[in-house]
Image (cartoon, rainbow, N blue to C red; front, side):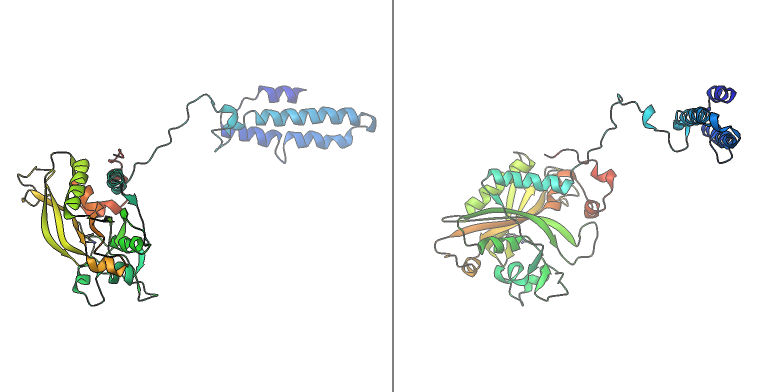
Length: 334
Ligand code: PHE
């Protein structure tokens, strides 16, 4: 009886006091064991009654301990003390990668112009990446795209441009074709602020009857005004790609200085954004398409480049360093 009273009067305030209580009453040399040990001296006819008393005492001692279990070390958040009415902790949402934001925007604009998304493998074979695109093995244009080859098979490589997807789409043999092909490409470049061993491109291909260079210009002009605003100006410079003839590079008026000169446009007022041209007739023949009947245009742009113009990111390495201080700045998906 006195022990019962004593237990009830003990109110441990912290883990040590609770532990002291446990040792005194419930430990291997504790009082509960002690009184149970006294059972052997109880006369047989009283054993039943005494047993019940002792069990009740033991249960009380244990229940008393349990009621302070929240004091146990490492048990601070014990469920019996959790406040279920508290609002939950915020689940932090990530932000989209700037390259993905820009890629989504590019794709969305071309989808509105009637282009469908097409994709191809990043590990390509020589035919799709080079040979079918008028770049046979000894072609000097291959030098412009320093290539990673796959050790297991000399015919395999990491695609150097998304033009390989043109080949994949054309070999399906369905005409007309109007596709936009986003994807990652690889070149054996030393990593610096201005070059990386992988980057991203968006390829466009349109083949139908009577497609002209005017269609190419108007499509790309529609694209840049959607991307950079209605005041943007464009110019086309003659260029060379083995898979297009004629070929051009397209510049836009500098979005930062508007033409007065800054570091983005290297004080020229213009920034280059893509390569393009009319699909070479030989390439159509490679895919059994009659160049007398069909014509088309193609273009390819660097997603990093467009992103750099849009957000003034001036170091390519930032895109792949996973520094959240950089990544968290891009909170829109527009
Ligand atoms: N594939 C070219 C490059 O990576 C870009 C391009 C695509 C040019 C389509 C013309 C037509 O540089």
